[in-house]
Image (cartoon, rainbow, N blue to C red; front, top):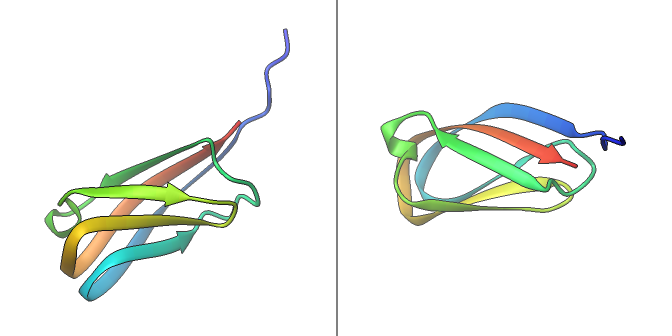
Length: 79
């Protein structure tokens, strides 16, 4: 059996927002993850959002502008 090597990175992201809806941060994988999980860690970070990613960054976009401190925990996996 062959099990492909998986690369996993984790981290937290904090930003004191003054009315914005898009937050971008680096995942440091040098490849596009096959899966990304984002967990809000405070009530400011909890409204509806979606995440996109590429070879360098993860971008979290909220449905409405966010004011206050955004605190997210994230995990990225590349197969």
